[in-house]
Image (tube, rainbow, N blue to C red; front, side, top):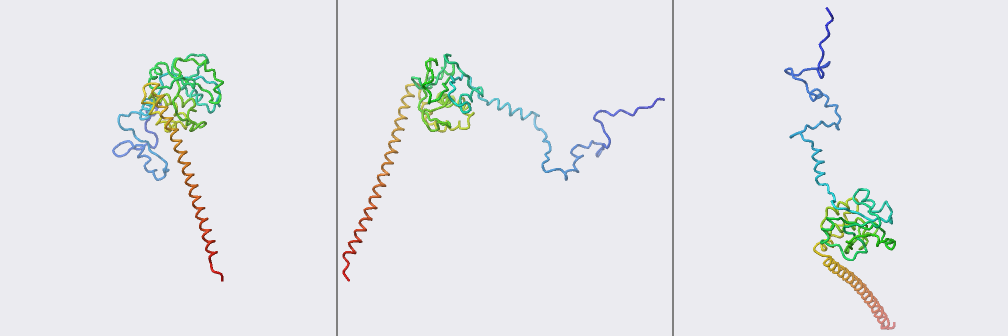
Length: 287
């Protein structure tokens, strides 16, 4: 007779030291290591069993993020004249994120172009133009406007931005001195595209301050329907600003005047006291 081979052990079968528990049941991993709990480190964490229908929560979270992701459907572009430091240029930063595209000089753009050479302010009536053809800006330095060939920047819809205040680190607090991303965001806000404005501004650590500083102005422009109405609102805003400045100056002058009068009164009191003392000494009887 030939030698009998030992029975083959099935994959995943019982190895050496395998034990049964109770009425022939298999010892679970948890029971097998229950007696080692006293030497487990405090940082040990047991796997959490999935509950419910077994769906992957991470997949749900990612799908929710995709649903809330904002995309700008219309073209956003710029003519970049390389006036700014590339590390501080807001237009170049938007380009790195794929949020804006470059235009060549002499290249025509059929959408709204925000430019200091515009003849009328942007208004909610421009919304249909932006929806169809997009928006573009001129990326240049305010100190080098004379070097920009504005005659070669062609668009049938050139627009000015109404009075807004810059919040970028270079020109913070200065009216009109908006950079590229602020100009685009300002236009989007005025037209009611808040989500597109925030999509651009969120790439900058200071971006949130643009809305905080300008929201009262923007909300006034939003009430308008035409460029003429925006112009009138802007004129009222500028008049109020000048009146406020005049009032502050008058109040400062008044306070200085009041302080001067108080100083004069104090000096007069001192002089009177001195004279009274001298008269008293003069009238004393001789000893």
